[in-house]
Image (cartoon, rainbow over all chains, first blue to last red; front, side, top):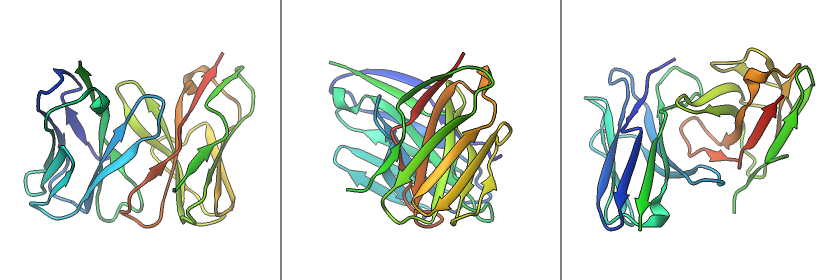
Length: 113
Length: 112
């Protein structure tokens, strides 16, 4: 089992604040990294698929960066809104592990109006 | 709109019962997965299947089995439910190895 860590575990921010969180993964063995958003009572939904060192992806106010050499990815939310409240999961895929995704424990974000 | 559906959102069973959790996807995906989600532990892989009638153990297969008789359907079976199997169960599918994974809405199973 590969170790994928996310920090912080939970976060409360005021509406309008910008925030970011981290996903750390083994740097020695990388194939891809995914970010998912999981809102309460809904299915997790994919945000980004990242495969190259230095990748930066953006979707509206949310963006992500990837550093495969040091083994981390950041997710940024600019101007947080209450609808951003969710758990954000990262999933790491290593070569030679078949089809398995290794998920972090998630960062729970609450945006206070 | 792609869809993964699970047979129940909430389920309550008694210890020792045989439990079937069904998952259906409409995207013609080869790969299907069963996870459980427990507080503080993240999503843990129970079983996966990369083709009809094929199955592979994930990280926590003990106490579970699976069935994939048709490409679109992947079933998780608890042969004799126990209280430590109380959890949220998520089904997922994807086309290839590192493609986006599509999740079902989850089944919250309580074993009394």
